[in-house]
Length: 297
Image (cartoon, rainbow, N blue to C red):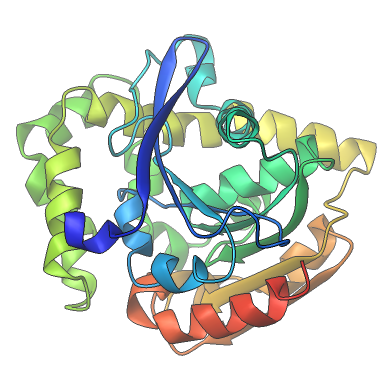
């Protein structure tokens, strides 16, 4: 694990009683905006180990374990799983970056983290200069356009939102099996060090409840926030770059670029030769795209 983060400092920040685990590395005085990296489910910041060191050669890079994941706290879900609303997670990100002296920054995010980044860009346009999102379409659009093919492929979306304690009990019975069945069968590209981190963190107490709360929030309170934005005509104004895996579910079941163009004013994007885990499957593509998209910030 330590080998993955040579040159990065470990830190924590508190927001409303929730401890968030983070790392930072790279020059603080590069004259370029810092870059915040947000991971996906059921992973941790370890998913960025193939790109973060290279990104940190030219600017300050900050990584955070989302609440409920990695070494961050797993607070109680609360009514309507509101503690795991993407609005709350976005506030975590702002608090972290402000604690490090960064009032404005760019974001690179994958999967669940990209959903947080979407809300972050909408709620905090003064903070987010630009965002690159990996292998998602907008949450509301995906739920409203669900097909049988999508439901079969993304079964966990509909399993995790079932009323407690059913999914929590089943995951807790064998969390490593849940991890392997959900991720491991998709490819052999995961580095042993990163996979060890995913296994270490998925067995931590409270993880199953936190993961379910995250998805219940996405299927409930997050959709209410997204509909309110749509009804008010609010769209992401910052430049947005979206990448999706040509071999993945999002690209085969949806039209990601078209859906993001409906949700944002300035969008570019394309499919890449990858499955879902783009930063681990084709890190060189992510680095090239990031250099182009964030290069003048």
